[in-house]
Image 1: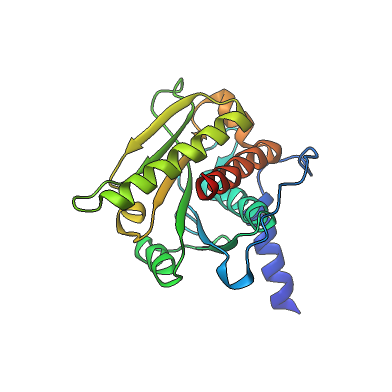
Image 2: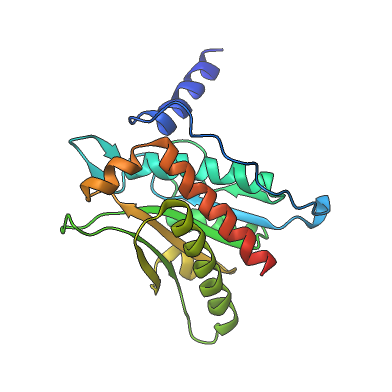
Length: 224
């Protein structure tokens, strides 16, 4: 019982400790795709940072990237499940998971896609917007092209849902998207260091929009 209470408290704190409205605004249900049980595409959602790895943070008002990525990952999982996809999370609580371990989870799961969720920071407080990264390695044109297509698909739906500024789809050599064997992208959902975006990112309703955008973009990628 004590362990159950501790686990519930830990999960609650990791997901909702920063200032967020109780519930997002109501939305129309997502359109479900009736995949055969054994043929459902598997999507790995990677909530960046966690545990002692705080990620980007801002003290006044207080917010931490690791908490926002976890909330967003849990919401994205819910919406992808509604769309008929099987989802594996690299973490579902506020724990540290190494970069090699995240890649191992993806590569051993026989997943179809890998999506890593992050939020940005900059020394320039005016920097704002959403950008999505993919990795292009030599002799892996097919995976790179699929990753770019996935990034473009998610970005389009994120912009539609959030009305955020587009910073585009970019190439980068981040470990988790470089070492994953499947099409992989890293989403930067906004800047914690920008006062306007920080205020939005502290709201569960806005994180819900990001999660819906990710889920809709993944769905569009499969159906495109």
